[in-house]
Length: 277
Picture 1: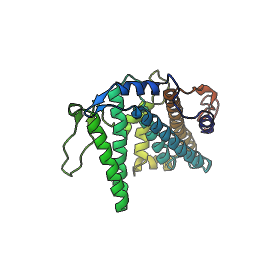
Picture 2: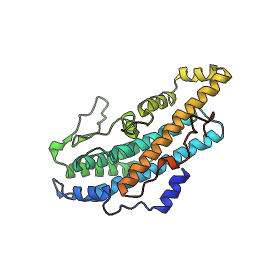
Picture 3: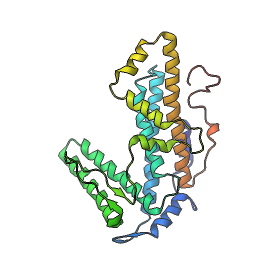
Picture 4: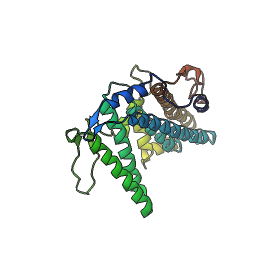
């Protein structure tokens, strides 16, 4: 976390010449929709969104660090680790390094913000804030319908409760949070199983009695062993995810990359340490 802060201080988050972000801008400028040629700004919005989500993830992980220092090594960690990996998963989704067309890329960015405004709208408590959120949501919807041709947009019907699902745009739709965190995995291998990690986070962030009882009924030795393994899984997985998405975002901006091995091991050296650091 300190390394990320120092890196951001030394390297302003601005796209360099020849960066993937600049290449995306050029691709977007060659596309068009019902109202004519597209603007380049969607690529900038993607990069800025990723940076904001990285910062939020770091704050969540600082909270996890504070909990560990207070010897809160099991259930209290779950909500902040879950929030961190969900945010990081969104970074991986919008900056997916696999081959995406310019239209698919733009669709993901616009869907990200439409989903954001829809979520915010449901949490507003005052009429003024709700109106602002509704206006933002309408603007995001209009941006999709004016940027993409009708044949590219599939809008599901409202369900029996009146809820209108998110649309599919240019073949893209907002994935579930579990599916999103899979974008944290390194295709070459060596990363934690983030699908499994998210299953653990999901189970333990709900009132499920079985895992709680397993911890409470464990013998002292079993409790120590379980806590170490649990902490390695959660904190280690989230930290590796942060490093992966940090490098993905830095690469998108064309910023210098760092050797992940130069960072201190995020959860102790499993070969030599008996306790996570």
